[in-house]
Length: 258
Image (tube, rainbow, N blue to C red):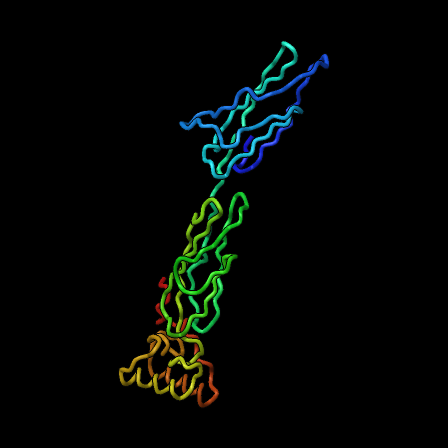
């Protein structure tokens, strides 16, 4: 039989005498099979007068993880007989996690990712964030609202564990933060207006800079920055024209790469 370490082994052992004579039963042998450490466990098994075999295995004793042979003896007056059986104590396995896939998202927006994990024994799992921005809930749910000055690629790493394996496995993912929170808002003040048009004109015609990356100038997401992007933004701001594209989807957006 296979029993997970930490469990209590309870077995009712049938015994008796065909003549009805008083019979006792006891443990006369208990040994580990194989291996190099033959020490007895911290809690040795017991046998009740009624034939109940009990052994409380110990989570914290690696010595318990093995195959054990138990020998019993039933005795009445001068006669006795013996029998034996084996118990396999299996290790408590560490939990494992599978982190979320790499992804991209906009700034000034709440992002949520979970860290799926499993434990063969269904032991309670603990989660600890060891790298990256944001915060992690006790249930392994990560959240972050990145400000628009945090554009770039961030690595988020979380470890999972249980009471025997504090930091058993680590899972990470890459989060690429796109700087644009509002379409057409190239200076990051939360609204698209004439100030953004000035930024765009200076960038395209006067070698100016884009505060949150050159890709944010691609108003029509065609992969180039030219007068067409200025026209798109002017029509949107002053003529109720079409909404500029989400520049996070522009071919110019560096993101996470292919």
